[in-house]
View 1 (tube, one colour):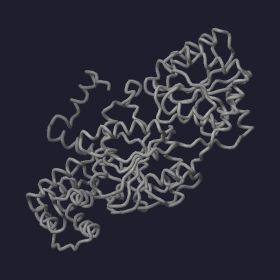
View 2 (view 1 turned 135 degrees about the vertical axis):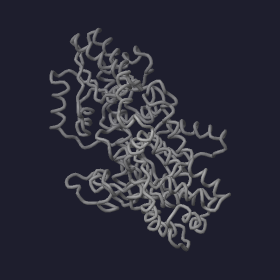
View 3 (view 1 turned 90 degrees about the vertical axis):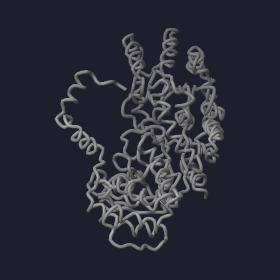
View 4 (view 1 turned 90 degrees about the horizontal axis):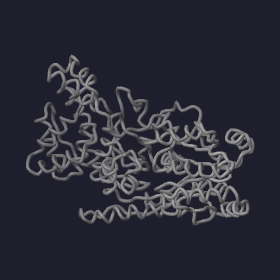
Length: 528
């Protein structure tokens, strides 16, 4: 993280609101969205939400006027088991309109065993802010599918592809209700009509409004807050936002839901030097997973990582989740000769064979090794074009610097931009072979996708990549040995007989579709 310069610090200090500590505190609260609601507004909101809480607990509500925090305490003492963290969690969520954190729930439940609702009432009052008081609270026992990051991203990673392909099939079958988080990650909300259309993979008009009516649009003054109670909560994506993780951990621990998640990998722990994300954020994510019921890793290799992590939980007295791998599919679209011709002209208009590399340009993908291996082969006189399809990642500057050096020396390197799925699969089809020597992968989707297109692959000789390569159609290498990588690439550039044999093997690899994956994953995570 960059430190502010002295000039920047000076500008902040001279901000008028910061001349007074009292004004500074007010600015900070407003910027954080934590401005407390007025006494009258809080009491009106509690009067509306207390019956909602009583219905969720299936208990009668005996209440007069709740005109203060002191008046709220005995009402809660008569309605909620104050020593039960689950009921404390529900009361906080429903009455304040904000999902509580684990720390708050535990502290209030401890005090609840000693007082008569005073700690709970005080915590509800503190959490009932202007933003949460304006919300409509809905308690549900539905199966909720958390799509917060995926639904808001304007790019597609391997993780997002998995989530989108899975979500659209589950939603088409009406198996679950999609949700996201409000801005600031203090509560769950239904998706807007436009977001639901995206989640379903629908094109065209997305103006229809989904659950929660028009009030669910993010950023509007009024919103609908979804409070899970019973039912299921499914986390199919990698959640790394700290406020979201803090509240999700309390949710899966206290809301009496059956919870489950897709497990992509443990790379931030096993290969921390290759990723931008620090171990701390990922560790917080694992602190959520240790309380869920089931995790479905995307490969047997990823399953071994999660089983190793779960074994470590024995030292904390927790059993951890059930770990059941569900392998990702390898499904290629139908051939499109016109598109293939266009992509071939783009990647190798001069007729050179194309060596394709797919993946974001970050250290873990090992693209500097690919560039070095390619340069070794170019210096030996081999003629081919290197096409690297992927976006900028953390630590990509050395990669781009090296690309410019090689281009300046006349090396044929292309970096296609804005490649959608259709053009990506066309690139797989027109390539002579694909290179994917990643240092660590939960699955290695480009390996499976290339083989599904009948195109051989050079990939790493361990982990999930070796797992996929064992089915045929691939050469495996030590990705930390650039010369080993160059030798495998040279074999596939020179040996047409070997290339044809691997193509035949690739075409014979058993295929699983996204429909197969979604069905098996649902059975694993939802227990059906």
